[in-house]
Image (cartoon, rainbow, N blue to C red; front, side, top):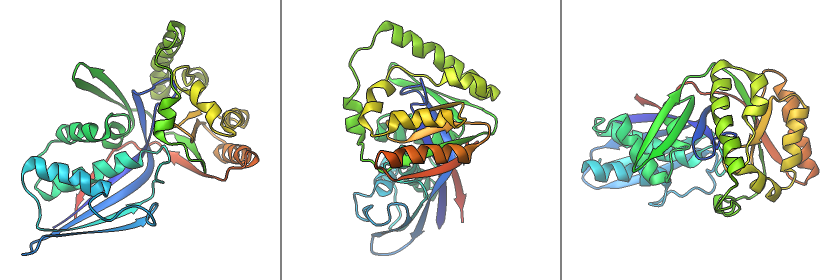
Length: 302
């Protein structure tokens, strides 16, 4: 039996939506699980594409670890399992590569077992493994997703938005998530909290309406970007260059160091401007022009 799962990339901490807003993008990873009945239990892993040279192929592989969560929870597993990962999402890019791996492993494992877990069951397992829903929720549902914690539960709201494209630029700069988190204050001024709260509402309205004019204000943030931007060479100038080149708005993607920019037209011009600024700062960068992924992870039995 063979199950193939395709999972989209995601950008989280979207503008003012720190730790609550995420967006699925049209760049995907594919995970294929092949199960064969055999007398000897074996697991093999092959990887192509992004990260193929350094991602592990043993028990520490994230796709396999995620699958084991499902196998252990259901109490059933295939005797012989081959995992193939084809990655288009760069690792450590702020595009949700770990969320894609976790969901890919869990959904493929669930499919092999006959889908005993619901989509919501898988979501909660993925949140537990990732530690937050910022990337796994939009990767699962597609589009724009709002995630709000209520006591011990999560309220997840998938929000339909019209087709649009974003510019995504990834500089070659090592900026671990732990370092990005450490840069944040433990307390923020009330005025900054109010500033962000209003803009989260405006951002949701702007994206659902396709209102690019409102995005310039709606994507502003005071909770995390001001503390992280100075830590990445050229990032402040890159954000300014994106808007000078015609972007309606530009912001850090996830925890950084990457840039996400929204524009109705002129995407190539924005790419040229942002990559040039990073080059001046001594950083090579890669860029994509990506549509919003209207659909989330897809499971196919082949």
